[in-house]
Image (spheres, rainbow, N blue to C red):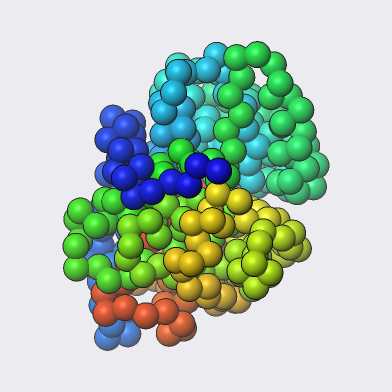
Length: 296
């Protein structure tokens, strides 16, 4: 297995620069404590997923077409990346994928196919269709180039705020938190209590299947942590859990105090910080996406 490194992340930062936004930081104080918010929900396509998709596609010869499976955000990132690179794309999503995300996937120009009750079922069907010559199947998180691309979020933070001493990141399949942890800055991997593929894998010593039941499942609903992210993460992060009630309260507070409208998954690390379950004198909370039907 090719395990990505921080050098790969720095290389990815150069590769994706023409296609992604360098998203801003917001230095803030909440409850008398300082923190920095990385406003990655302002990224093109509405989440960090564009970074990994672009990096994976430009890391080698461009394919004739792109195919993927997604709970929503990755599919939108792939659809946007394919459009930017002039490639046709097909995205398989589970039947439960929210309209707020699937409508945007189609608007970005990709063909959308609904299949199965879970991301895993959609991915299995997508892999069957990926055997056509000239097709590149782009995994949502279990790909070294994708992990390196997602790590460019942290690369921007390190560049813009070298005084940050901790990262707080939401976890689904593990791509973003794995790429972030490669920075060497202490990283807290935060999951909903009922959406904890990483926590279960760390306990078992290997990726294992978990049941998913969370309001953040459309973005963090991987039933098994990726093998590539797990190799990176197993000795690099601290695992933290939050409840659905806590993450929804955190989402509402981001709106009430800062007028930041993010999806439930993006509020997960902020919820952990509010609850005092993380460390750091000046942590960076990554707000990873805003593709939600929720309105304040």
